[in-house]
Amino acid sequence: QIAYLNGDFIPIEKAQISPQDRGFLFGDGVYEVIPVYSKRLFTFEPHLKRLKNSLAATDIMNPLDDAGWRKLLQKLVDMHPWPDQFIYLQVTRGVQMQRDHLPADNLTPTLYAYTNELKPVSDDIQIHGIKAVTLDDLRWQHCDIKAITLLPNILMKMTAKQQGADDAILLDRGGFVTEGTSSNVFIVRDGQLQTPPQSTALLSGITRQVILELAEQHNMPFSETPLTLPDLQAADEIWLTSSTKYALPVTQLNGQPVGNGQPGQAWQKMQQHFENAKQAHINK
Ligand code: PLP
Image (cartoon, rainbow, N blue to C red):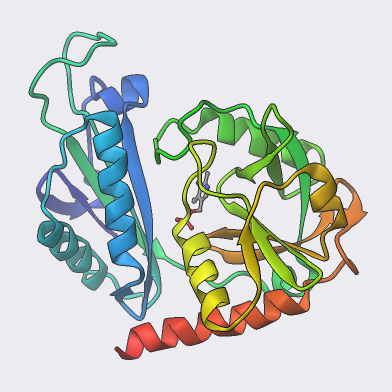
């Protein structure tokens, strides 16, 4: 497996960074995860746009231009045998010898990227779905930035696991659903697809956007609307969406069945639309 680090393609186990990297010391960096189907980058433009937003919001220098990003990532993909992959890329503010919260001027960002096989979601999950619990969202007020500081997300996922669930759906202080620990939330109620609106309380997921566009194309009623725990409890279906998992059906919430306790019809329909969109992209 080959990784890219600051200009070089090297075996992943040989990749090394300085412990004085601000990413390591402070979590001072941003990242992206981009899906690849049949060796073609899927939804590359919106991922690049979000990366540029994250870099601008944190005032970290963008180390490449748009064409440079595409060339680098495609090269990384082509170096590996798997047709379906996911690229992880991370940009930190760079190495600073004196530890100081305030960044020094003119730091050179550290750019790290690697790719891995994107495996399909297991049959067990496709058939039975996953279990989720609701938890208080412990995070900060800029969840729209895809920052590498994921400690609250990790702690919340661990709590979900301790409670016998696979993941958590997060509620902000006002009781509104934000998102999952690494996914966006959709519900289906009376045939309508609903997801919380974009805000600084959640990451604007690319998969979320793809699903909204597919809903529009296929005349599935949808709305971006604030959701609460009672909305989740009254839902016929709940989905958790992300670039590596597409949409996972949640069939149990806080120990109670969601709808009839099985992955729903709208989920199945959307899955088909998504597969078709993927194929169209591959054949383009
Ligand atoms: N929300 C959070 C907190 C995430 O970490 C992720 C992705 O991992 C998402 C939402 C989904 O975003 P995307 O569909 O762009 O992968």
